[in-house]
Image 1 (spheres, protein in one colour):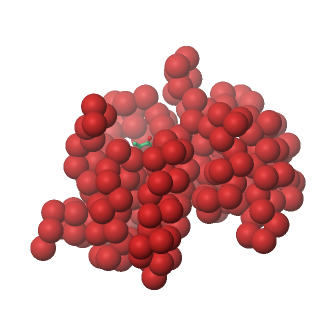
Image 2 (cartoon, protein in one colour):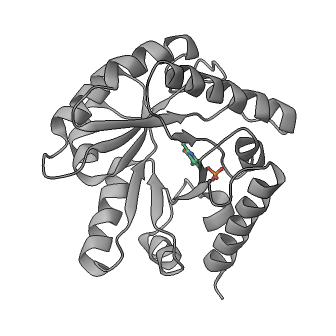
Image 3 (cartoon, helix red, strand yellow):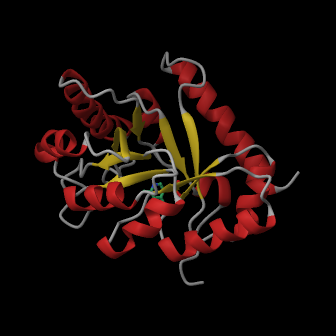
Length: 234
Ligand SMILES: *Cc1c(COP(=O)(O)O)cnc(C)c1O
């Protein structure tokens, strides 16, 4: 067996065990494989072992991979998730080529994605990215503005608001990790009380997925634990 398949299997087993440990429903947590910086061959290999959903951060790199898979492995019906920062001039390509966007943090970006989503495709699935740790340099809407933004974009015709996403400040401490994810879940609950039918909490990465699953994650975004350490110099 190759390394990627070993890693995928280990991560999946770990998710199943952690669901059980924290009394989550079996298979309630889905796995998004974050393939940024890795070659398309790594994606194809993971897909051949059953992985369907892939997350990418850099638009041009992602478009090249999406096109390669469509042309060379059309039998692999992959689901593409955009999880990186979004500039206005990139919204059209995102709206045309992805099924999910996790990193919406401005009304203008949401409006453009809705306007530019081709009418022939189903609505684009959206998560609002929340700057849950309040870091100055981080993307994401401040928690205090999240409800207002969600209510303003929930009605956009070609979008389907599915939930929230966050990348908390790194911490080695499980209780600290859990506190950040619990704060995201609270915002989700507030939005649900305001009448929004949200079903997705996109939270948890390789180093904090246990805390995320404990606090209600429905989708963990895992790169390193599947594909290995990233080399940004390449
Ligand atoms: C890179 C990235 C991930 C994956 O992180 P790992 O620590 O490699 O699992 C998840 N989410 C976002 C938004 C990312 O940019």
